[in-house]
Length: 290
Image 1: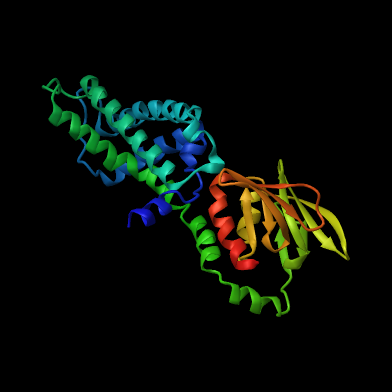
Image 2 (image 1 turned 135 degrees about the horizontal axis):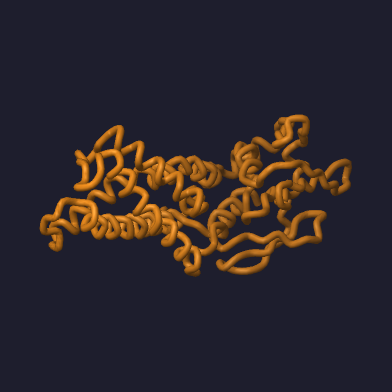
């Protein structure tokens, strides 16, 4: 059970939008919280000694959004949380819990200024503030984490894919892949076996294709994450790194260890990296393909 839980917690996972974009994310968090609390009133919040209920809610949310922005910036400066390409479920949950603790403590001390003059310096009030923070502020943080759950399905498809399926599909006629660009007039089509690898280059993606026994480079405007989604139905296309998607069938050799690999692909001199967080899934699909 412990091993299964450990594997699940260390699965690759996209960063929460609020964590990935501290400034804009904090503003989104602020608006989200204000509307949620005013509309649903989850804790029967009342007016403070100076302001109406709505204004009190807005002030509380604004006050806690400031340390949220600061905490995310601090987390990004810590090595463990610094690389979004090595983000995992465990890092996501840890960052959320730390954020909620920080906001709960901030809400507690803010109460000394906003709430009626009653005795607040006690553990009961402190834990009540923490509970309130977890109950309210977990909603926007949890929402932006849960919407990324679909990205886990790609990894699960790879793990469930077996050699028999690959073998049977190899004898079938391949379906043409049509890649849509962010520019409506731009489109790229190719067969799965023609793709060697795709590489992100700023706002563009370079596809390296084997066309008529020649390696040709086709470029369209798009993001690597969007391309990953468009190619998700093909189980032997694997995103090895934040900037690369490879056709695992084209891997001729690899070197490295669990800290990361370097791949050689058929007909390509460039070595393609496999990030540390991707090595486990990569090993599994390599066993199935070869």
